[in-house]
Image 1 (tube, rainbow, N blue to C red):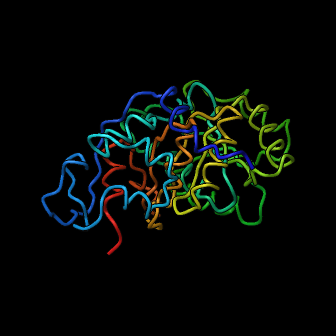
Image 2: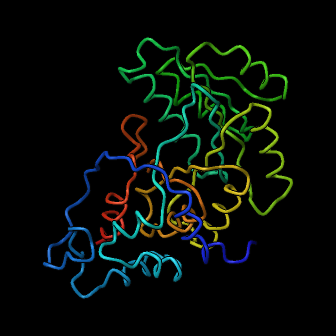
Length: 286
């Protein structure tokens, strides 16, 4: 395990900041109590809790809580974290990695469906999906998710198949790669994942579920950043109460792009920015 990557994460992330997305998110209205000074216009959900109390409840590491201090929570998040968009998969294949059960297959399916349904891409070829996860039922699950959209799927069982799929893609066709589930503490597991990424010539992106232990999330985020990943998607945000792990991982040098907040294939991804994340942190379970 790396030595407390979250201790220096705020400084690392500030140096890697990219642009912010501007799209909004409909979130439950928090209870109003008149105290909005520290929350960017969002009232605290419980009158006797401070922002620091809420961040501790989310298990945000102490050094990051200190780094987030400022006029507003949204401003603190904007200063410490990076928010941006995923790389263009029509230019370079985009590979999604994470632990088994992290939600990467569903995230990939949502992105592929979004491309198909977008007016901007109605005259473009459908995404090509390469399935490298060979666990039992993974290919069947991905096929079932994408079948209504007639999206082609290739099982990337050999290096030759991976290289051939990329070589024969159509102009303007995005390539999305579903990588095998990995354990970042296993050098063998990480090495096999990177061999697939390099064989396809892909850009690596992390899919990390909300609700994980913050220190473990930081280890995962740091491991992916060390191997060239620059972006991450926060999955299962509708299934978790505490989301401090997402902040801890992103602060290790990964740009937050989307939050997966629904099991629905259509409309299940929300672009993340500092204001949206601040709202999510301050909307506590009742």
